[in-house]
Amino acid sequence: MTKSISEQELIEDDVLIQAMNLQLHKWKAMLASGQERVGWKIGFNTLADQERMHLSSPIIGFLTSKSLLENDGAYKAKAASKIMLEAEIAILIGQDVPAGADKAQLAAAIEGFAPAIEIVDVARTPHDITSILEDNLFHEAVILGPVSREHPGLAARDVDAKVFINQENVQSGDPSRYPEDITEIVSVVADTLARQGESLQAGDWIISGSITKPVAVQAGDQIEVSLLPLGTLSAEITE
Image: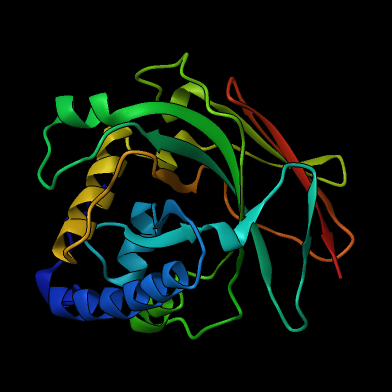
């Protein structure tokens, strides 16, 4: 999940660390207020997006119970928002993952997979990397499907992903948006958290970035994401 670009073009590590500190300060405050820890999200999962943002790898955000939606539920769009839907493979972590874990450790830590829908609002913050990280990568809501433990070693090429808006198939999956080995996604999260003095823990979910191009949606839309063999999820966008 890395790209070889000029070191002079890359955002410096200390800028990313400081921005993640701001994000995690908000996360800790939310947990202290009674929200439950759910997990993490991958941002800028494609090499093209990383190059555009001058990143050497994806960045991460957090998930808490505040943004969990039920399957077949409703998301209320805010005024002046620009809502995008992302179809994602969710990874359930079954054991704590240390920084620098090898491939065998990373694979053993994956308990199962599930379909996921993430809803983001790309109008809610400026698009510089500090603002994006501090504001939790545009995150608005997430739907997590039931976990499947029947597909060890799952790869993006094994998943038939489709997005339907008002029953029309508007996007299909592109496995090249994910690394060939999904353990790389787990590694990114574990190593990023370790640099902040945090850790990837048993029970955490990771939503792995959109496996299709993100899709613009608006109030009144009925959305459905099919991620076979993992399952299908749906929701309604309301005013």
